[in-house]
Image 1 (cartoon, protein in one colour):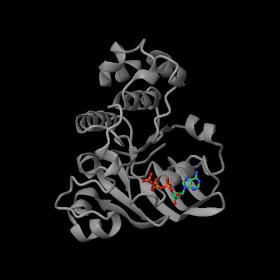
Image 2 (spheres, protein in one colour):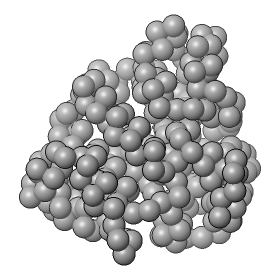
Image 3 (cartoon, helix red, strand yellow):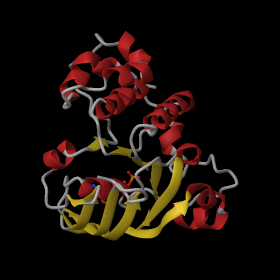
Length: 254
Ligand SMILES: Nc1ncnc2c1ncn2[C@@H]1O[C@H](COP(=O)(O)OP(=O)(O)OP(=O)(O)O)[C@@H](O)[C@H]1O
């Protein structure tokens, strides 16, 4: 049970390799039990790999505690069942199933939170009979988020939810995440710094597979032009700037 101020997720000395190459090196950080925590860094620094290592999708060493209990020895499906919701970068909807079928397949709890999901995503209710593969990128992102929110999770790991979406849809996804964060703490990998500023209380920043800073107030980080330039490669002041221009330059299907 989470006691006040105890982190919901504690990652210590996490290392992971892909194809024999170390992509996460001795990473330690905590995710508070409330609100949104940003996991930031330039392209290729190991953000996705860190999330995958936390849930055992890639081989890892080190210690991961969920709500005070070790999960680093467990298999991915058991970690998910213990309350770690995962919203992957590429959304991974079942394109040949309907929206309703995608959601039903994700239901794990005896009493899935259908009402919450319907309230958050009214558009998905209207589209429940539509094949998920024919949805826009933004709508697929909503399906992906909705699937994670149907179950009662202790924490959600959300990987680049606004990537490739048009600005208006980015805002819709951000608002859905803000609502979701009222019910579950979120670790958010996000390149869009406007979204980070809007949602995150604190940030951990990776650089070259290692932690460059952790637990810093998000607003203070984003206001620090030098830090932003050094760690993200962006000049802020224009905190709306995106360190990965491709992420907003080419909205796909949104
Ligand atoms: N399947 C893979 N095979 C080989 N190398 C990989 C694979 N996936 C990731 N990597 C490498 O691991 C490193 C970390 O990648 P990762 O996707 O974790 O970074 P990231 O910070 O999430 O990047 P991005 O912001 O571009 O998604 C990179 O050098 C990448 O090239």
